[in-house]
Length: 135
Image 1 (cartoon, rainbow, N blue to C red):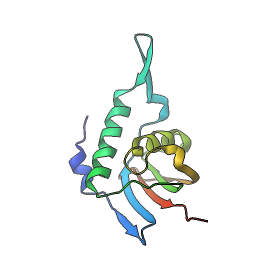
Image 2 (cartoon, rainbow, N blue to C red; image 1 turned 30 degrees about the vertical axis):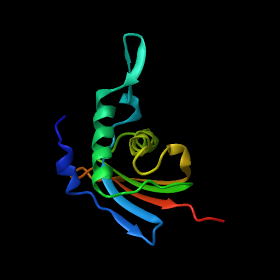
Image 3 (cartoon, rainbow, N blue to C red; image 1 turned 135 degrees about the vertical axis):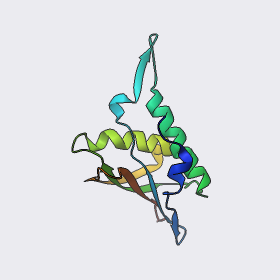
Image 4 (cartoon, rainbow, N blue to C red; image 1 turned 180 degrees about the vertical axis):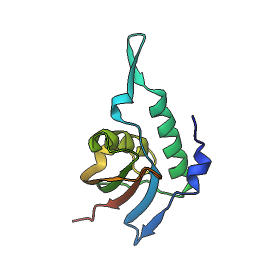
C-alpha cells in the first residue's frame, strides 16, 4: 500500500477518561462497496480491506488500548476526502477493523452516533468509545 502504519501512529490520539471513555483518531476507511471480492467462486476480503484492518490493528495495539468488555457506545466523526460516498458504507469497515482490539466483537456496540464531515487535506475518523455504564 501507499502508506505505512508507523506514519499513522504519529497522528493517533488516545485518551482514557475515568476508565470509561476512549478517544482515538484512525485512518479513513475504504467503502464497504470494495470490502468484499469474488475470488474463484469464493467471497473474500479485498486487499484494501485487509490493509485497512492491519493498519487499524497496529495503531490500536501500539496505543496501549485495552479491549472494552460489555456494551459499547460509539461516536464517530468521519472526515471524507471528497463530497461523495455514504456514511454507513465506511462505518461497517471501521467497526470490523476495530474488532479484537477495541472490543472483542462489534456485536457489543449498542449505540452509534455518526457524523459526516469533509476534510480533503486530512481524511480520517475520530472515534469515541464508551463503556456502557452498569445499571
